Length: 138
Image (cartoon, rainbow, N blue to C red; front, top):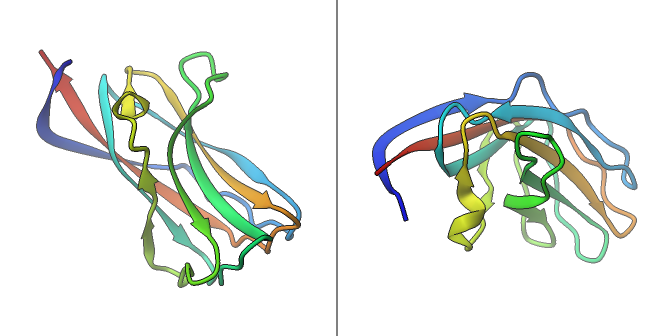
């Protein structure tokens, strides 16, 4: 298992993920891992407030799509369910995966933000994302 340096590099997603209707899912905004290491944090900044709801809700997810863009590793997420709300223009932390290997990245890995409709969903505001990477060393 590699050790990680204390140096953190922050990468912002280029452009916001589009707002969505309640039943729609949106993605297509990416960040590329600048070096081998791990994801140390992920946040989103919402353009408008969101009020969570159970059964029909919205989840923001960060996936590692790998170098070929086809990976399915869930790195971090935030489910907006009852009692979990987001204010406009605040940074909202996504919860990192509890599986250490899910956080590992190789230089050039593509990470994608997804705004997922759950059930019939709730409207999803436009948002931008920020990912913190920590370099691995042996």
